[in-house]
Length: 358
Ligand code: AN7
Image (cartoon, rainbow, N blue to C red; front, side, top):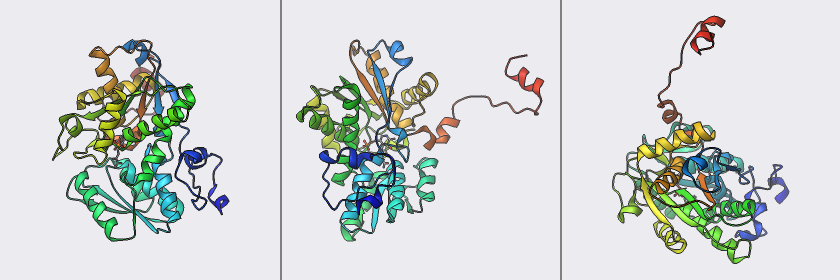
């Protein structure tokens, strides 16, 4: 039975971390090649900031282009095990892309609730392409999530937001991979915070790996919200969250307590970065490191730059920034970077001249 699901050459999250996940004999071991994402050493930022070894964990390399696949594969496998025929989520974009893709892979229906006008084009394109039923509500993400909870409480549809405990179980495997790659936990982990599920999941992964003797220590968890959507930093929900980083435009995170617990138990911080700092880090990552993350992902790098400028001493420390999603998902933000695209006739001399070679 399981072999019919083993349709790739990769182990995937379910088989690779089977012993650490709440699977049973009846859980179908579905896989689209999620996990085993690259940990790439910084080429320039490290020297510029004067910090110790700095790595980027490219969660953008997951099948649908974000970290959500790690949790979605577990949530969808459990939905199948429970005999569900459909999944539903509210989303700022990446969760809906992952839900739509994994549902399509498994022959389930997918329903996604998004906030009208607040989702990047590439992410919406994914939900459309995978054939999800899409509802754009006249309200923000937090309102969409409330509707998602109400609907799944009423109908036999699996809620696949991070309120679904299987989501965070899957996402914690990214922490395992970092430890497996480095040989131990890093000293600092920099990560964007929106609905606060991912920081909660990473912390759980690091704690679990240490308890099992796979790591000797745990990192300080350094979480970053966008200034206009920083409820955890402010200590109160934000009614109308605003930021260029649409993925983390969230005013009342579902895993608020989990994020605070991760911060406090690890000796870390949850701080805010401005849209300007996010966009600066976004360009720096793309142009100095060759890494095209989406704006929300750049919040981790913006946070690292900011803390470093403010005097956090990272010399002799190992740091990891999580690049949570691909820049391809949000072409509008990339195309807003000032540049000149010269339009010319198809003539050698004209092109040589235009690019300064002749
Ligand atoms: C690229 O897709 O909430 O703090 O509905 O897409 O675990 O919410 C996405 C969040 C960071 C924040 N980076 O993670 C959704 C959604 C990217 C994201 C976050 C998201 P959480």
